[in-house]
Length: 277
Length: 227
Ligand SMILES: Nc1ncnc2c1ncn2[C@@H]1O[C@H](COP(=O)(O)OP(=O)(O)O)[C@@H](O)[C@H]1O
Ligand SMILES: [Mg+2]
Image 1 (tube, each protein chain N blue to C red):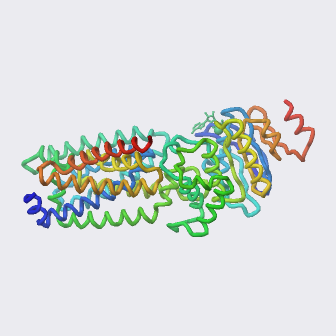
Image 2: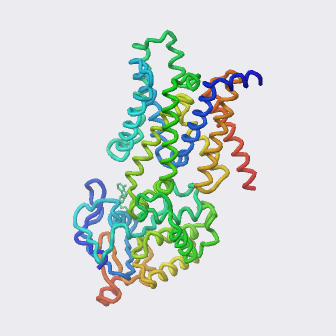
């Protein structure tokens, strides 16, 4: 306990908590949309692209990696959405190609041109986010904060449209909703969320952070609003507990949060089953 | 004249599914589109809705009917089946087309949604989960949503598929009542009996093309129904 309070007094840890909680909140927002649309493939593919982008950023020694990673990921999101609609290249295959390619390319870059002495440690922390949340530069902390808040505001403003487009895209389109524009918006938000989430849990665990809270909430709640709100709450609680536990037990932050999400999912499934009876 | 279709061909990626379609829809009509499975009824409907481009020919909208004033009841898709959404949320989403960039629904829209739910007999289900409803109730929800989008023209794609006989009759009656209130109906069905009972116009697509009206050439209408 004492150890916890000494840590909590550190500004660095306080930043980590605030940023972690905000990122967890953002990443749960589009969970339902990702689960129910084929966007989940895009999410997975993008996290690998983001890894490749981080590799480039670290090779050219950028102080604020997100400045490079964010645009690359957003552009990839738009490209993936576009190829998905173009029936000639099968969407899933394109995503698989891009994501595996980016992973290999990223590792190759770090391996050949990396300047750091601790190469495998670097790769590991990019993939699993081990300590990166505590080691974020203050410029990155600020960028995370601002982006999170923008994502939350946009989500609230476009909530009804996101619902309409996710529930029944054809109906929305037929009755005059600009579905392609909102699909694009969703893809861009997903890209931003992925870049944010990567700081918290690393690129391989992003999908877990995005999808688990939504799946958990869907076990218990049955309308879109309740599911959205409760998945935010679940995600925030799990991230908070995960960060605290990782401080006390000295475990890697990212995996601890994801394990907390998994436990949350199990609890929600149990509650859901009890409620059904 | 709400909709005039001239020499229309519809299909996918350069392949025509059905061509040479000609028909007109007037305000207050009840048009049934019939034909074999796979003859292109859904494809035609999607083209009418502007979800697909015509391969050739034209669709002319008249009488001040705008593209987004056509409500739509789709053939159910898999996504909808396990979607966590309440009846109210789904019905409200019918207004989205007229919202433009406005983020939230107006009070009048909320009231109108309630009215439409009442009209469809699902008001007491408003806070229930869509996926827990029976097939007939789900169709009523989607019909209420379509009514929120427009009171002018409704396009219904096999609204009774998968419903039991009693619910099917109720559904047909509900649609007929809407038509009597002045809503123009375009309905896909492969139930010739229902078409002959309710429709004012029938369009048959497939090997044999037919378009006729109950009040038009009586002989052709009777001949068609008795094949
Ligand atoms: N997305 C698609 N891409 C290519 N062909 C399709 C697609 N959807 C349907 N088809 C084909 O178009 C034809 C007409 O289908 P459809 O309009 O759904 O028929 P119906 O609704 O009359 O049963 C079928 O032969 C079907 O295989
Ligand atoms: Mg069909």
